[in-house]
Length: 119
Image (cartoon, rainbow, N blue to C red; front, side, top):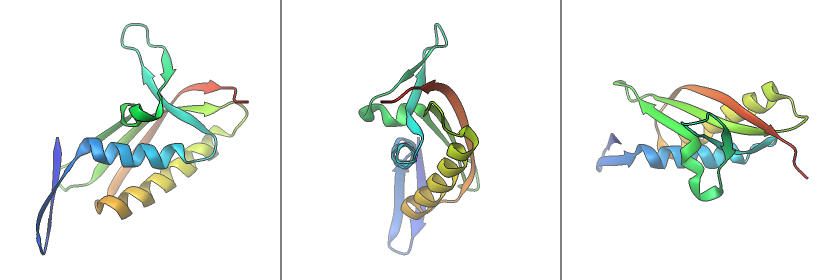
C-alpha cells in the first residue's frame, strides 16, 4: 500500500513498507530493545527477527486524514523496565517518523512478545 503526499513540486508516493522500516530502525536503536519479533501463526511463539526483516515486526496503517498508526511487536532485554523502554520507543519513533516522512503519527501500540537475556 502506498501513502501519497503533495508538495509544491508534485506528488510523493511512499510505500508503507518504507515507513515500517524507518520506524523499525528507530525502535531497535532504543536501549532495552533486543529486536523486532515475528509471531508464528501456527504456534504463536515469538522469534527474534534479524536486521533485514526489520519491518516484519512493524505494522503501519494510514487513515483517511493521512495520520499513521504504527504497531510494534518487540522483544526486550531481561531486567529492564518495560514501561520505560516502551515510553522511549514511542517518543523516539514518533519524532523520527514525523521528521523523515512528514506525516503525523496518531498512535503507536507496542506488543511485548518476549524477554531475552543478553550477554
